[in-house]
Image (tube, rainbow, N blue to C red; front, side, top):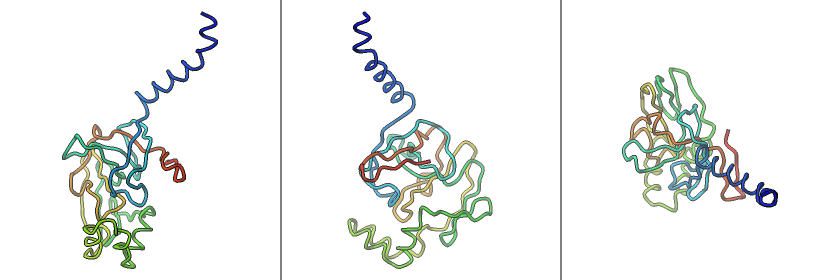
Length: 190
């Protein structure tokens, strides 16, 4: 028995730790689509920490409220009880302007009328960019208790809370903590 523990003990301990982490705490996810461009791109691989709580600007995985069989990756914008407004591409929460630095790259391209070039891979996206007057359409929503308001970073083409509604706590699957693929774009998210 001592020989078995000596030879296999460390391996079995590491294997058990990996299984416990995977089952109870961590989930690998693949990005599908372009709603989080340029922050996250189609095909990238992420690791999420399982949770049903989120803070403002966390990137989360969630079940889409209009189709619970679909998993989406979005950014938390509005927390329970808040009034979230967008007017002329300025986010306001409970009457206070809130900067969105993660949008700067695409906002700059949009302002210079160059975002359609980024969308060369999809003619429908190009047409949207060419005809849009704002990067994010104006809206006002009051977030119900125990729910979140989420948006994709690529606001012109993202299907998010503006379309499928608020996200219940129970629909939140996890918080993105690490992009591990492609290796040259590895990043830890706070």
